[in-house]
Each structure stands twice: as C-alpha cells, then as structure tokens.
Length: 440
Image (cartoon, rainbow, N blue to C red; front, top):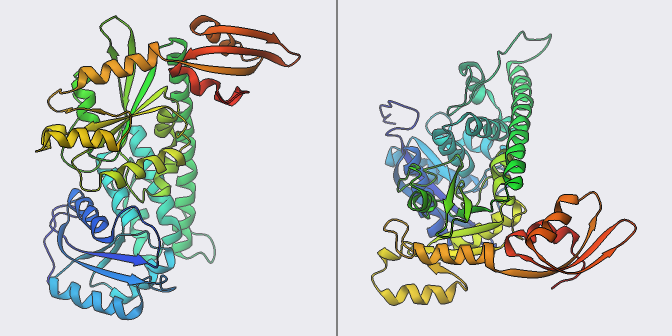
C-alpha cells in the first residue's frame, strides 16, 4: 500500500469513514448526516477524507462490531483508496478495537469517534487547565485499550499536554512484569496525578464563583452546538477578541467578560466549549471544572445555528448534554444565530415559531443584538418569580438575598429554619429551587 509523507501526526493522511446503523436505535442524526459531521471532524483534525462505508445491523458484532465479512470488505476498500486510517463514527469497545486492529494489521490504523474528538481537543487546548483536562480524558480512554501498539505513547511522551499528553518516567520493571503491565501502572499513576491537579483547578474556580456571587453580578453562560457562533457573539458583545474559525471546536477554554447595559447594570457573559452529539463521556468527566461554570449560571443563552440542516437535532443534543451535567433546570433563552445567511427573511419568523421565546440575531453583523440584550436585562432585573421556600438558618446569605432583592410577602420562623413566601428576580430561581416548598 502506498504511504503518504507526513509532516505532523495527521497531515495529509487519508481517512475512510465507517458508519453503522444499529437496529432501531433512535439516534438524533440520520446515518448520512452523522457521517457528514464525522467528515468535518476529520477535516478539523487534519485528515483528507477519501470515502465512506455504511452498514445496518440488528446488533453489533461481539468481536469486530461490524462482522468479519464487512471488516474484510472495508480492508479491501481501504487498499483501493490508499487510506491510512479508518474512522468509525461510534466509540469502539476495547475488544472491538483489538479485534479490528488484528484484521487490518499494520496496513491501516483504526480510530473511533471518541479518539478523534480527543485529538481535536488536544490541538485546541491552549491553557494549562485545558491541557490537563484533555490529557486526563485521553489516558482514561486509552487505559482499557492499551496494547503493545500503544506503549510507545508512554515511552515517547515527556510532559505537558499536547496530542498525547505528558507522563512520568516509566521506572524500573518489577520481577515478572511485562512492559504492558509497566505501562498500565504508569498511566494509572499519571491519571491519579492529573485528577489531583484538576481538583485544585476545581477549587480555584469555586473560589472565583463565590467571589462573583458576592459581587451580585448575574452570570450568563453561552451554550450551544459546536460552531454555532458563541465566540462570535461574545466578541460582538464585548470586543473580547476570542479566536473564531469556521471549524468544529475552534475554541476550547472558557472566556468570561463583563457586559454593561445602558442603565449601568451589568452581567458576566461566559463562552464555553461547544457541544456535539455522542460527546465522549471521558470528556464530560474530565471537563468537570469547565462545565461547572455552566451549571452555576443564572441564565443560559442557547446559541443555535438556524441555517444548519440538522438544527433541531443539534438543539436536542445540547439539551441532552445540559441534562447530563445537571444544568437542565437553569432558565434558558434560545438565540437563533446566522439570520444573515437566510435567503428568505420569512425563514427567521418561521424559525421563531419553531423555537418558542427565541430571539433572532446575526452575531457576525450585530443584527438583533439590542433585542437580545433587552430580553436578557428584562429577565435578569425585571422578571420576578413567585416562590415559597424553607431555608435553614445556616443559609443566612440566601435569607438576606431574598429580603434585599425580592418582594417578601410572608415570613414564618420554624425550629429548623425560616419559611419565606414572595417574589424574587428570575436570575435567582435556581439558588432557591432546592428549598422550594411550593411549585408556583
């Protein structure tokens, strides 16, 4: 098989995409649409996509996921197309990975969707925090898949993030230990170290959030599918100069900026990592410190690329991820972006009907930004919600906040706490939900 000349890990490598529809499983994206997205991920990582193969199965094959016959067929297609790597649009189990590597031998490499996303995140992690989070996710993904083919990753890396991440020295081999056992032990030790470092990051972020809470400035998180325009919107609002590109996961590390309204009231807007369907669980766990920024917000702006063919599927993927990270109870405003690309002006009005309570904007050209800020300001400072809560006496800050910023209608002191009934600004509802006694 012809081999390509490479100047970095993936540059100019030729990729063959493989997508499998399993039984009647209800995926958000149709098979072809999901493969199209995988192609964009491959392009972002630096691959040249040379073809794709699809398959429908009632159940995954226990050994190779796709069955031995299909594996041989794909190997023949890869040889014909001179492919260097086969990219699967699903996360392969460790056994599937090993069995497929046996089928393809050294002629072609096998990567799944999770490995590809992890690599893209590694490319775009520009801060120490981002590098730590990506490295942890990479090692937790690799550990159960570790074979002799992976051991070079342990011996070649020497610290500090990057595509393969850093690791401590291998050390001396104990009596009877294979190199594979040594590598597993080293990776487990590295994972433990990374988790310790990230706990420090979580504690640091928590202290920052406490200080922001004490300042009483509302916090708004921009969430949405990758490439929906979150960073463009933050730049439009604040001139933040956040990196923007028409690529998946162009920005990774969160950015927070202050936005002042015409009446001098203010809010903090945070741009967060974009979501995607089939988001690897290892990334969700490793990015806990970053995702906690979303879960701690007073309000979410769900940025939606209204021009995308799978706009509704993308929106549902975002909602599923918010539920997974415990942020689905936070009030959310849909923001329909990129209306400047709509050929039919009536399309924006129709989209508003599809997404109730949404506001239509063009983050790139600033259209609709004033309307968006007015809606946000009204929610943060003018909208009140009726609540009855029973607050323990040790929640003095919440008791004081209700009296200071809410309209108290009734107070009743109990043995274990105080019952307060009244109305509070909408941005504070999530703080009081755990103590709510009524369902108004």
